Amino acid sequence: MDKQTPINYHLKEIANIESLSERVKNICLDNSIDSLFKLIDFYKEHGDFLSLRNCGKKSNEILVTVASKYIEKLNSMEEEITENGDQEKFEELRLFCFEEYKLSTMETEQFKQAFLEKQFPYFRFILLILEKHLKEREFYIFENNFGFFENREKQTLQAIGNRFDITRERVRQISHNIPYRIRKILAPFADELFFITDYINYELKTFKDYMLIDDHTKEQINQSEQLQLTTRFFAFGLAMLYQQTYYYFQEPLEKYKQYYLINKKLAEQFDFTEFYHDLLQKASVRIKKDYAIDFRHYVRSFYRPGKFSYFERIVDMCKQIAQGEFGYRCNIKDELIIARNTKIKLSEHIYQIIEDKGRPMHLKEIAEELKARQKKLPPNLESLRSSILITDSIKAIGKTSTYALAKWDYVKTGTIKQLAIDYLQEKEHPVHISDLSTHINKYRKTLVKNVYSNLKLDRSGTFLFFRGGYIGLSSKNYTSMGSTNRQLTLL
Image (cartoon, rainbow, N blue to C red; front, side, top):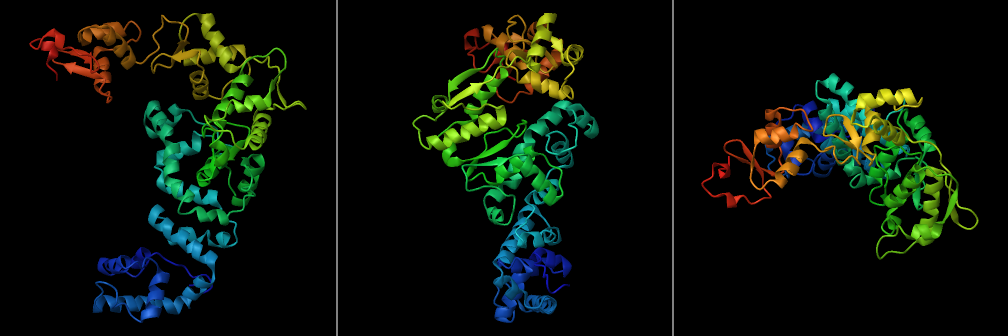
């Protein structure tokens, strides 16, 4: 073993290496000796382990043998650790990650030199943790469905489902939960492990009102850590790390030109989310000619109730967002110039296609018609579906991948559950499942048993189920029917 680079194994690892019994291992752990360094230090100070709680003669002999062996191999390692504060911090990181993330000493050892040189590869490190803690299919979805990795085409939910033999809907559910899972797994980096920010070197201007995460950030980190991650993931990861002091108003699954981490003092005063979405709305509509708005007055409208501090700093921040994300600039009068926009958006194309057909259309049908009308298309059906779902003027018809215009009142766009609720709400008494299914089949072709199982699986407590196949709503009072009526006998 190299005396110049002593390895501070966790006590559990030493127990495996030296085949220590559970009793001997627990004697150490119960007395807060959780690493090799602490074991050696205790031995140096006391000469044996008899003063440890529950440590008898035999256990003492075993621990003395182990301590003596490693003292010879590691040569005064505790003095080396004590003299080096950075080394102490690395050991703190190592021991925490062993307990919290089950990373072996050897897995963290490969990051030691970079840590001591204050070049700690935070992103390479958290990828190691995520690969270890996300399930295989979760990590695959993380890699292939979020736009977090460069040079990797986003896969459809169906393609991922086929790979793991699960439904597209199940893939969607797993995918929806992954950002939450990642935040939960990596939460300690914003708390117990926040000291690592002293050991990374990403050229982040943490002294300013905001940190800008852009292509320069991406290129610098990818090169230094030999990664191929996108700006989106760097923003997501840094937002988690600095969440105690910086606010992140952008969505992790949306694509932006630049990403901003904003000082929380400013975010407590000003609603940056609403400001961004209002600018997005202005950029989304067709405008025949340029027009100007009083920018300072415009900014004031997004202050939170009862707040009005840091105005000049917030104005500067808002100008950065307006210019960086939308290309809008202020003139010498401090008026924001909203430029003309005559391009037809994808959502407008889709709306026009459905309106021209005059009826609901399936996703694949929309894609074929869109292909015939314009050259630039979404890369796959899932991207097209996402574009449709964020368009308020178009509504999904249940979970059938069929879409209609929101203004078509005669088209029922809810799920089977919602159709059932609407129908039962109109009825004074519980309705038989066959009658309910007949009504639903006017809008969705389905079987009686499918309707019944769909409602039975609902966990919200919305429905009441009576003997004889009758169904009602828990929000309604059916006692007026008489206590002897068989419809009032609940299952």
